[in-house]
Image 1 (cartoon, rainbow, N blue to C red):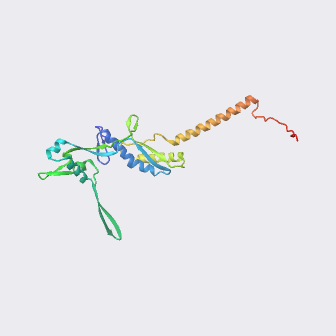
Image 2 (cartoon, rainbow, N blue to C red; image 1 turned 30 degrees about the vertical axis):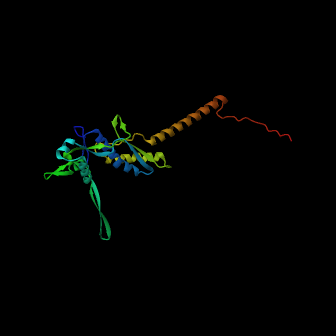
Image 3 (tube, helix red, strand yellow; image 1 turned 30 degrees about the horizontal axis):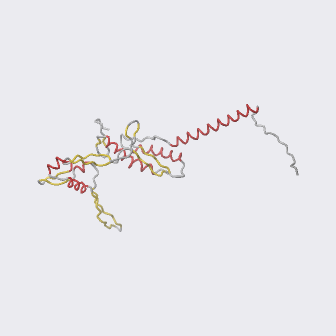
Amino acid sequence: MQPDGSYLTPEGDILTDEIAKSGYLRTVQDWIVSPQLKSVGGVAGVDSIGGYAKTFVVEPDPTRLTSYGISYSELGEALERANLAVGANYYNRAGEAYLVRVDARVRSVDEIRNAVVATRGGVPVTVGQLANVKIGGDLRTGAGSMNGKEAVIGTVLMLIGQNSRTVAEDVSAKIAQVSKTLPPGVEVKVVLDRAKLVNATVGTVEKNLTEGALLVAAALFFLLGNWRARSSRCSSFPSPS
């Protein structure tokens, strides 16, 4: 976190608004936390809710477009050209084939701002001169929060037939390792540990069984006057022929 309230990512992006910060949290969840948790034995997957799917938002300024004589379609085509990945066949070396690919996909806001749309008088006109470019978030259908603040919640799903207490304990141990690999200022906490729930349930059953046994013994003592229950005697008679 910076003194002005913004957040500086390890990649060098400055996140100034809450949507961009929430989008970064979701990126950390999807690309750092989830893959490591999926490697735990007995885990089927990780469901995530909250945050925003990271997107690059380009907001064209009609006044600037008109002043340069550039249309919206030309701006869109320029963005497509700036985000391109093309295969270039392969070449053989030492008996092995190596695939060749030209990767020109955008990875930061600055790369989008510096993309050339057209030239005017021999001077290139970039996207940053025509539009406001920032990091935003895609539309979402749910949100997550913790103590009133935006958060990303991940639910670890277990494979059928696995021991829930063992898997939960392994996931908790893995989360302790994952927390050491997170970017500065980002932390992960266990909200609900199923192992604690299972242990508490077993403890409750043991307590109820113990109390029930003591109550039965006490009832037998007060009703029969002895700790040992007496069995009634019966006589056997020959059945009539």
